[in-house]
Image (cartoon, rainbow, N blue to C red; front, side, top):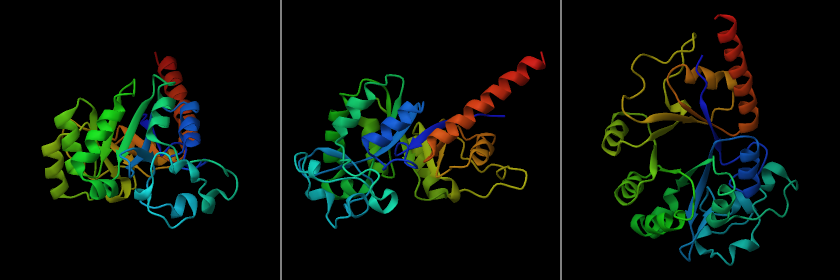
Length: 264
């Protein structure tokens, strides 16, 4: 049995507001080694942790994030009221600098930073990525920079030594060709875009594109499904339920260790 490496999707987002310091810290405290979060550039060339291009989901306000600055963003909550009601009232939208400071307290952790396409379209790929790389120089440990944007990942590869991940809009020959050109460290895909597993838990032969990259599948919150994909060669599983799957992973590791001892 293969045990996958688990990535906390937007932190511990099943239990905390996504892309907040509370969510990231909860994932790290739960024992996550890999923690993913989304980043958008704002008006003064700073960055916030945010998936969307507006504040409707996070703050209940119909307002574009691109009008925010590092001084005004602190006035807006990220309580995700529609999901958590008043449980996290008062939680603020974090700046990237806040997340970097948090990760620097967990030197063994790996940040997986997704730069969103919306801000790339708003401010331009070169402008955004130049400022992002500069700010990430404050991060003391290794990280991955990932994106749906081919151009953003190409920029990272041309201007830094950071590991990269290409997130696939589609699982088809066009994106396979792009992946071959980029040769990223990670290929990241929604598991639902792949062919379904068979009744015996196997992917169809030759499903996974060959390359030096490692595969990461996201939106997987079921431990058995995660293990099935790991047995098919998927090394990374990204989940909203990081605490639950880490506990399951720990138990399976103990079973494997026990079986190895009792058969020697």
